[in-house]
Length: 382
Ligand code: TXA
Ligand code: MG
Picture 1 (cartoon, rainbow, N blue to C red):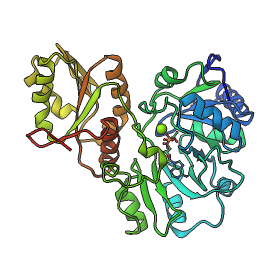
Picture 2 (cartoon, rainbow, N blue to C red):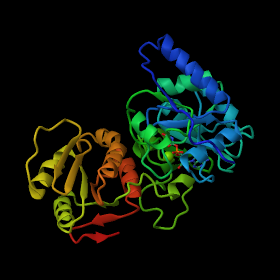
Picture 3 (cartoon, rainbow, N blue to C red):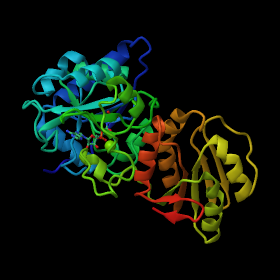
Picture 4 (cartoon, rainbow, N blue to C red):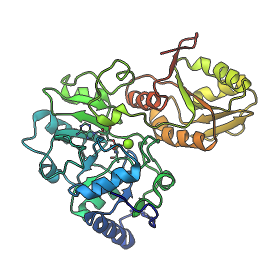
């Protein structure tokens, strides 16, 4: 089916301070658009989503077309209240599901259940299961309730690009391809939701996120299988159960490497720059100074969160603080897009402990790097 990709995309700024009349009118209009089969991008607490009526197969097809997404990669269905779960899920809700929903919904956790036949195959990429999320973001929740139907929404980016954390990112990828964008400002978390599969005998973590493996394990008291969504599982030949995890993702145009020993980054950056490459470095406030010292020049005033510095052919992007990894999570995807705009040839990214939100950060970094990890002083590649 062909779709027009030169439509006018309306961008509406929402303030949500006490949800005034203008906001309510916009949400009502956006909800009606969704119900009628249109595409509306909206903020959530994780990343911006590209929403369509989850019960409308043709609307789901439009999502795949607008994103250039492979049609076997299923969409997450978003509900606006707990009571709507039976609309999309088949059968009873088990104990683990009850525990996780009570503890983490609404919030950045997606759960996989057997699919209710009401949800068309187009929404779930032909799977007999459905991914369900109840977002905490106020605009997202109200939009779903106004639409009066669950909303199928992948991240609102072109397939393979970093997920959008601002409206500018959504416009960059989808302007002219969708009907409306609700602008709720910058998202809070910056990485997509944690995904847990509840359709087997025990829960399985498919994609790490802000609801961390430690939080899940604590809630489920050890009933969770070891993480299969973590970096490296693809190279072990395991079949990823979240179909989307098998594609190269979040990918900047540059060749990217995750560097296990942060201390090696200045040397790697310098020799790449000396060989004529334009180099981007993704680092943190704690390491930026050391990199700067080796690559030349001193930093000027240090902004608390983003510290960019161009040293000849080396662009150093400070994406957050090691001491508070939630700032790194929030800054990561925007930084990858920025480096793309700067046209760097190679990116060296600092690595993080694979615990707490660090596991999700490393998962996205290693995916963006297409699995390129430089470990140890020898610079050997895994
Ligand atoms: O935070 C988020 O989850 C964002 C916001 C918009 O809610 N959405 C998001 O959607 O990240 P998307 O489409 O970019 O990622 C959905 C992931 C994909 O890896 C997909 O393969 C997996 O969820 N998934 C969806 N349905 C599934 C199912 N039935 N079984 C296994 N994996 C599933
Ligand atoms: Mg996505």
